[in-house]
Image 1: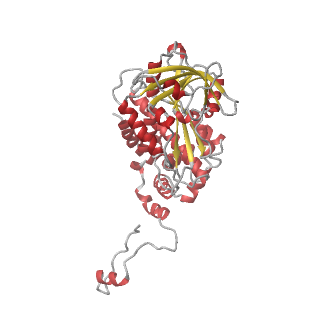
Image 2 (image 1 turned 120 degrees about the vertical axis):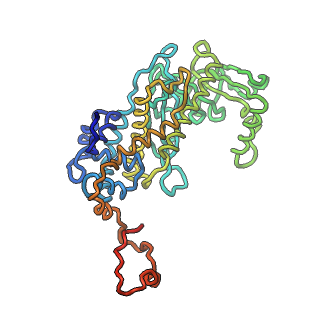
Image 3 (image 1 turned 90 degrees about the vertical axis):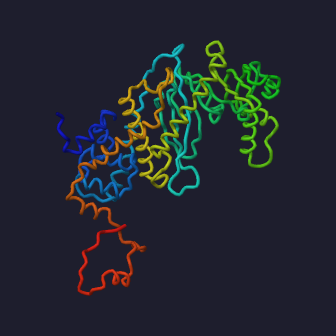
Length: 435
């Protein structure tokens, strides 16, 4: 019979098998744990990181939990330790995303779907950071994540691509500099085209008016055109093919209505309304390698990264930064939250098997609900709630008590207290601290 666990660290060690083996070594190399004071081991420091970044506990609550498990510590000390964890958390995050080989696809290709999301700091009215994500479209595993400030837009330049990779991205990435950078790395492209952000030419160099070339195409059919994409300054040029699928009349009307809604001032141009009734995808893969119909079907699977981002946001609150934008705590939180997300994902795949959600076979479900269950299962391992020391509650109250401030906590007026305790000789017990 298995004996019950009596040590919170023993239970916490179960999480370490889903993290890089160098967790402790990197903590000292990156100077996250220079000297042991209240937080004595890398494992204790990792628990603090996961409490703050993964479970989104406030600093004072992190201090209270640590006090209940080990010894008294203040939230200021917790914040100071967390600020030193930035390089360590980044190093761990890089080791969670090895570019591992995957099962070979036709001609050894690997489809990598790329997208980005935004992060806002508390009280922000705009964007503070961007998350740039790259996911294998067969296994649905993330192979690269990157955090940048708001000034770094969506571009394929952010990602390391290799020969045999096929980058699948939406129209936000249809910019000649990024497309050219990916091709120079040896990658192929499947990118939704924004005809108004590029210069289109025929293979002979003649300007190509895409709207005119597609006018006579029947509905619900595909037209393939060999094209050259260039930039306005002529510095970037990519050769490939455009596959244009004409939507049905009903679908086209809905798309044009959305086009009008996005156009805040005036009316969109006639050409923009016409092309809104098409799905136009640019690729460097020759039609002999991947037919137009198959390529458009592959592009539709790009939605999987949108689902993954929505899952990260709704289950793990990845987009809700808990620290001041640009601060050391914000840097730790952003990378620590990604580390926690990848920890949940790796643990889920180890529990259910790597093939459970793959796209190259009949699927029995999605990861969404399972993420919620696994998050609930992991939380007690991080908080160690089963091992909180009963005698430490007084110290916890002191750690989590309010500091002196102008706005005092509410208290009943003396006249109301006199009504509750009318007898002068009655001695009521001291009331507990109230928030």
